[in-house]
Length: 257
Image 1 (cartoon, rainbow, N blue to C red):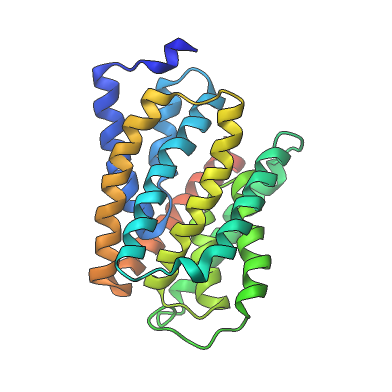
Image 2: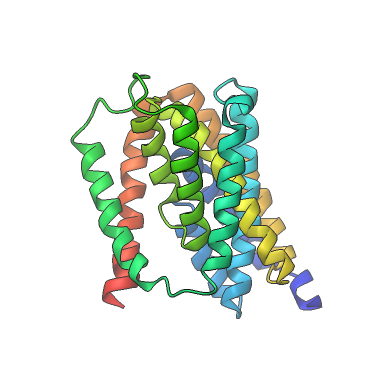
């Protein structure tokens, strides 16, 4: 495993730049994995190590965004503590389950769901503009959506941020900026859970993950600043764009390859 402690200079530059861009985009709308995972797979001969390294670097981004949202008052840890714990447990279970079951059927279904989300948001231009009356209690939301989407994140992953943001808007009535902030907190919890499994399996390239993670931290800080200062009108087009890109990528991977 000593080879996974080293990194070439050109790889460091590529990984940092990718992490910076992905951290910014992912904080705004999710989908950072569309950038990071292909780069890691291109320079890492072991796909499982690429996946584990991706979890390491993405944990830096979600940690940075969560910290800066909380410091700016856009996120309350006291309100999302239980949700984070349930997302952690769900992701941990999902990461263990994916090693036992074939996820191909679910992969085929996800792009359909993502496309439906994109259409729903497109034809509801007022969705997320402001807080509305919640449809669910916080307890029900946490056990259904925080745990359930955390389970999905550990089992498969693509579109997790999209599903969480929509759940916060529809279930708890959050505006899009507040939903984005809370989504990153739950992303952080689910990322940590999956990362623990990969660490125990010794499937992490530390040099690459930490280098990309440094870029993620900075990119997520910039992204969280844009969410706080520019609000929903800035996030919405980025959100829709990333949902469609994730959808197209999954259609290609699961239906056309």
